[in-house]
Length: 374
Ligand code: SF4
Image (cartoon, rainbow, N blue to C red; front, side, top):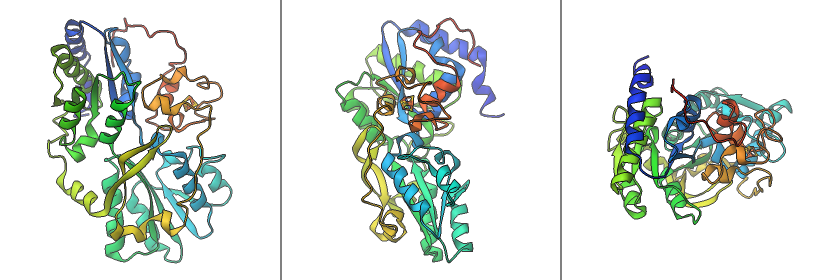
């Protein structure tokens, strides 16, 4: 498949690995920001092929994982109300709230529907004018533009029975929070390429300069990851800390101006809680005052729901790169994909799910002599 097969070429991967091995002279800790990158790394064994001095720390970029428990509980409350059709992407249905999930609500008679686009939910609202239709709008800068556009369309078309339960988050404030943490070990970032394809790279030079960390915009295929690592390590070895775009086939420096304009019209920046991490200033979006009528939190008066994370789940530490998933005592025992305690075990981009799926089940140091990334 074009743009995928050529980025999984084993010969080119070997050459990149040789270059990384030849460049490294001391230990470096790099964070891949996105959960999609984490899955690619674990699936292809990339971390096991790198020099021992290069550690990949898994970052917080899994949208399902960082959606706070109290937002899940708000979704459960709204979805349980009579007359509500609650629409969501499928990956949110098994995310545990306090004591249950959206699947449970559906089993109890709630009208919970899986959709493939927020516009599907808007269509359902048009077809059911006597019902309240809510779409669960979560995620990073990648999913926020279509959700913004859907609310824009709801207002333009006059569809008053549609609303959005919003929990959108932004990557740069999360990088800032990670770098400010006293326990931070990260020395360089592989930034999430798809986020930058929307937002561009304008927000990163200041971060790179302030924290003296290289930030390399990186894609998702094995060669993308290796090239991101190669460029980051090269900067670190030279003592540099600049922003570098290693994913130019998808990312333009200015990003996607139309998507950014839609975001600026419909949303405004707000403080946002991240699951297991806490509130990060200016790290999220909410509907702006002009669109507040479409905010499900206000419409269903669930703003005051407050909840507490289960003590056994250490997903906050996983999401900050402070522990690897299998260092959590519950990993693979109390917590499995069938019996998840935290969202990082459920989500297709969650680090705990990646470690479970690809059998990284114990604390034995990973072998470094694997021979192929594909
Ligand atoms: S293994 Fe389960 S309990 Fe442990 S951090 Fe991951 S999701 Fe939470």
